[in-house]
Length: 514
Image (cartoon, rainbow, N blue to C red; front, top):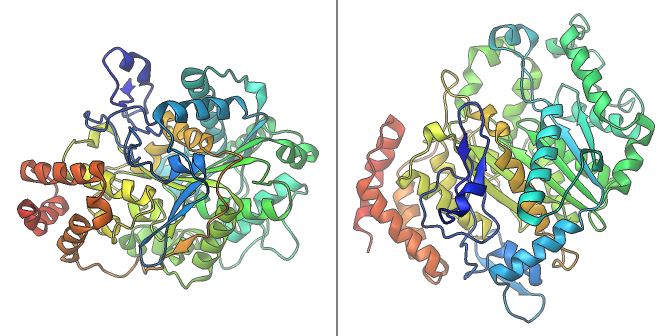
């Protein structure tokens, strides 16, 4: 049993217990604004700026027609949509209660990530991150959160599930999954659908027919979904739509939602649409995996294609960014959750570091076995708070991603993230913050960077000094106090891993900050 720490009093913590993953993973995902940040976190997902909303970050002010977005220089632009007081914690709670009562018809779309070839599955085991699991986890987390936090009861039959199944390269999967919604057994004729052989990709050869387990999974998914001829109509009539995805499914889901918006099946002007991306591969996998023997010589083009996302000029990267821009401008709210010791995707990729938009909320999931209330944890959470408030972190999260990356041998952060109910609840909370009186759509800003290029680690002290002297940070009492707390934590920090020890050595000037 894990505990979802939200800094509540001792009597309140009894209601905050959640069942964790197999490794007793925990995620702190407080966006309610009802808990002080000083209490020791039992897990990290707490990326809001301040629980008392004394700073009123972008997501809170948007409830009263306010938005803060970052331009390409990382400066701030405030747009006052209307005059009036900022929301208090009580007002925000009332707004979310009302929002929870207006969820109406709910639909959940699940999109799994990349699965390794069957030969590797025989060694590593059958994949667990399936679309069916995502749909059921989202439904159960939604029901539990609404009942516990807002007194709203939702029956299983009130939630339509769409666990979409289909492997292959990104563009092929988009067509295949779209066809499962709009009808037909295959994608458009001019698309290389998943069922068509692809000579360039040995994993797509027809000599590897679906196994019995795969066929059973397809039948189980079909049983959860509405009849094929009703699916588009069910989605079109839904009032609230959640799209839940993992890993390679993140670019696939962004493009799928874009296509559904273009087809008029989804409409974020009359529906609330949210996308939960868990360990998403927005800027590609860990760079060193490119030379992995399995990826290089055994796996398919589907796996190798993922490294194209590291290059902002590649077709796949440009398509993903364009799709994100479209759906964010349309009003879709996105939650990006990275995972500590992720052995496949770096943190900066999971949170889509290059993108800035008020509708994007970022968090990091930490398994309890790897959690420590130390300088490194606090620094990453602080950087995420900056990003969630529309401020620029000057690339800090990019430089820290390698320090918290996992290894293929001994770490499972890439898969434990989707076993934690609190991660799904975070997506519900973020979507409840959307209202019909939200500001005019903001345009997404994008900072392209080559994720494969080596980083100069000695930039980190300069970044820390820049953040320390940032006037917008110094003007905020909660952020200023958090920086001071980080300096105190640095003096006590005794890292154990080689990467963390090297980071501490380079950050030694932090102890002299005044």
